[in-house]
Image (cartoon, rainbow, N blue to C red):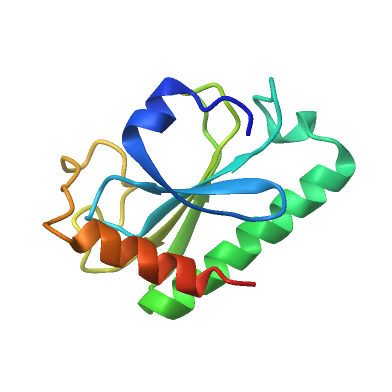
Length: 134
């Protein structure tokens, strides 16, 4: 795997690997929040990927989005590739709900990250790995 940016490493837990991307779970129990990180060195922007990798990334975003929406009965799926704080290319895929603490605004900076309770992280990871099986 391409070296993971230290902030991503600190804020996430590995879930699984897809064809191109490593899928990470954000350490915030407020939302089902996954991050896709293409396994490519020194890429900061989507347009820097080779055409086949861009197509694969798009398909992997759609796959993860669809699985999250179905599994969590989400009202909306937010997809974002900002990179202002972490330059390594990564894409946020977040299941959103009208009752979530940040709705309808973006999740960033609205409420502090909620830690996963005892045993919850393992259950989340198991459930996510199940729904992300191709």
